[in-house]
Length: 490
Ligand code: NAD
Image (cartoon, rainbow, N blue to C red):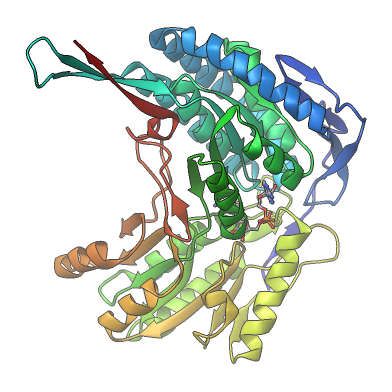
């Protein structure tokens, strides 16, 4: 086994043993009852900080501030809001080295990935401000003489935004870019694993000139916070990124109050490799894509189907490349894959491998935890996997790859579409007819043809089916945060 488990000291000046406070009405404050919870470095299991729990009163004050913040921020001309968000994007770029260390310490990913995430977040913030400048209503001629009609676009109101831990900066930035660009205010709840990254993002936005009351942040018990925020009459929109079960729960709660939601949920992306590709080069490049962020990516390439005529060669190169990955503390300069972000993911990997093996899978490499400190799991490749194995229908969200052979393209298309998720799908072929057929018929929101694309600011990304609804990014980025008003003049 060529996996190197690199462990580095996690003492980075200025970012250890932090206390992450709440941000309410422009001030950093403790939770009213003084309750805190530990933040763990997943590479070492060291406690690297604590975050404050908001009480019900704290949440109420955050919403009240956001109500006033909505008035203040929506009154700022869109052009000026664009300037402020551009300034925030530049500040984020300036501070990326420091913030990347915080992100790596609490999430585990390699430092280079953290820097890349921050760059993408800056792009989204800048994009949101630019799109805000282009929001325009329209005039429609009335049906009778002397009658004219305006269609206005107005901010939807105060937004409750729930962010995940896998890309805490860019996935929070996507929400803030859209809602702030549209003139909305918010109460944001970061994931419990990664409060420090979002704290830094908020500081950047406030330093750039976003009014503190437009941008409130609370931490604590997720269900307590979401129950209260969703029920609060002042909250007019819910946006969530996370698992499909939690997304369904929040969407159903929001439905009771007739509140619109944007849901960016899980995925189970098929990767279909036909027989007309450069096998070795593709297998190597897909290893890098698959194990990016230790596989904890909603659009991660997940279910691999490889044409049987190239199957053995593909598996051989893929396995060899996976074995060569340097796994270790994200702070290590050689590290290519960090730990999983929390103990739940580690346990989930063990359960998925055990189930697949019980149903006949062969472990080509990996299959178990690395060491007993830190949430490291070996890059794992499975063959002879049954379609009944749990990991073929449940989102893996970790470094496990099932590779199955196929020889019938209609059958592989049917299997690729035969999951509840519909986030992304990738296929590799030079054949133009197949490219047209698979890009038409894969039932997902994002498709890579000879590509596994990243989400970039100028593109709308959203899921189908259990992967959610609504999009983030693209010229659609603000749609979720605007509502229409029809005004008829006589
Ligand atoms: P989880 O479902 O327990 O929690 C996911 C996130 O949702 C966390 O940030 C948590 O704070 C939040 N959450 C949980 N219950 C909530 C509630 N009642 N109200 C508001 N927020 C709540 O899952 P997990 O163990 O943290 O992660 C595993 C699963 O999450 C993965 O299988 C993956 O599907 C999903 N996930 C998806 C994304 C994504 O980008 N779509 C990101 C992170 C996690």
